[in-house]
Length: 295
Image (cartoon, rainbow, N blue to C red; front, side, top):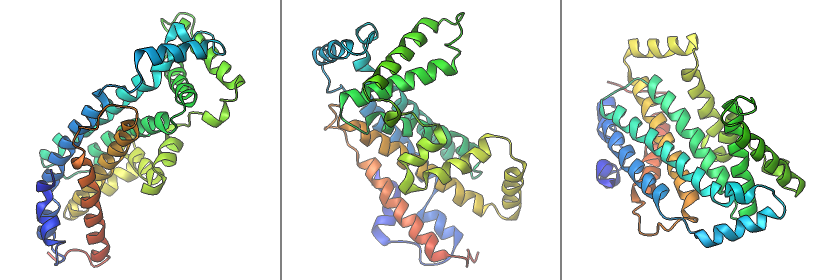
């Protein structure tokens, strides 16, 4: 997929402050094609066989059961892998949709922001689940995720079809806490979770910006409309930024799952190439500075 931005790698960055030249080097449609390729790679990783065998999972559940009642009933040793696959496939699916959107030549960052926000949430969740190889830590974190999901789905209501599962998983969460796996393994809210796992990549700032598009914000709407009325260039550049940052986050999440999967044969070059393009793109914008485009 490096061929999509082959001219960037071959000739360097645009030398003029020309928006027309900028678009030749950093085409939104080209990035859209690349996002689709990364999404397919991510899906391959998510669907690859887990390293944890069925026999090993059963043994872990027996080990858990002595301290965590209900572990065998709910087969909790498999939760981290199952949830990681589901969340990573979701993030990849969102990225694929974002790629299709860019391929339609959209240059307005509102809808890409909405998609990117969900991609960041799912990506951060995958990284939370796979940050530590200790099966106890992976499993308690997975139980935390399940409890959070049930509670947000009305599981504490006795009339809910999830009431039994909710009660059982809450008890297991409490049992893990009694074994020292409580606050230290806490599931943060999404704002803090994204900031935590993408701290070196302006994660918290990105998430806050995307939230301004997801939730009604009249100031955000006016900003975008004014930028579009001027010439649309700022919106086009912002759309590129949203997409490439979201794609890199999804790629990072896929890499966090790799060590728990049989996936050594999967070609991950599309993910690595994103970083190269991002570095060229940011370097170009730094050079452009406040001068802006002349055309």
